[in-house]
Length: 126
Image (tube, helix red, strand yellow):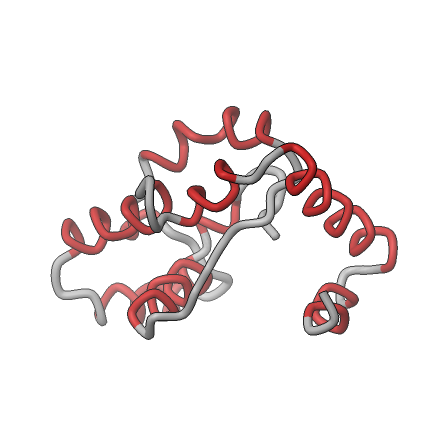
């Protein structure tokens, strides 16, 4: 699930884990609360650069950046990971019909009502 401000994509470790999961061939998709939120933040997502990512500890950012030999190539791959029409993270959301989108929204709301760590406890049962 993506937070309402899409800050997930500004966090160095989160983006690093998305990239690593992609490298390993893991299937990924996003759970959004609404298409309107996506529309409001799409411009920000299209301007993402790994060099601008944040972490709680500055040395974490340095460590992650040191592992990326070509930042421009990584940034292009990040854009493809998010926006590619066939395999990007947003592709599955955009292809869902309204009913499927509402099921996803209902799960997110249920998780928020139950509590933050409930997301991980309930993930396997979904």
